Image 1: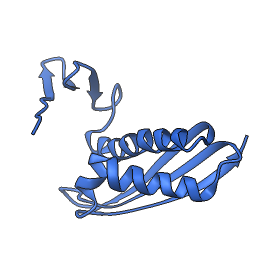
Image 2: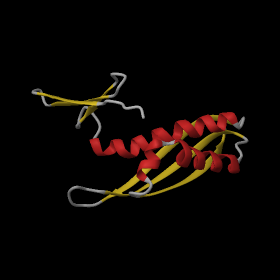
Image 3: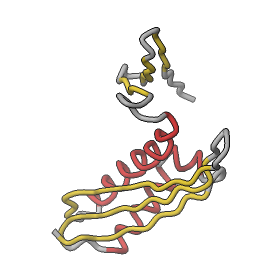
Image 4: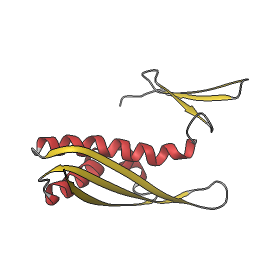
Length: 134
């Protein structure tokens, strides 16, 4: 089983950075960066969306753009556990088949996305989609 190492660094200038195994950095903490907890829904939609695009391309769908949002709910008190994440896919293109889009989402999330596979038993994840003709 392959392993990956990611890193966290804090320095006295109060900078917080994460680094992936390819040395790409993400800055944490406002105002310069992203909240650490926002990375969870961001990872989910980033992971699933890449696969959805790949599947639609293989299905010969004329996808021009994909916009995805994730709306999450968390507990009001520490540790602010995530309870739900709702993902909305907006497919922009020409003659995109709704059944193929639905199937691409299902395959992308359930068969290929490591983040979805990890989270699906811990929190409620739902999705919907719309198709916009370009």
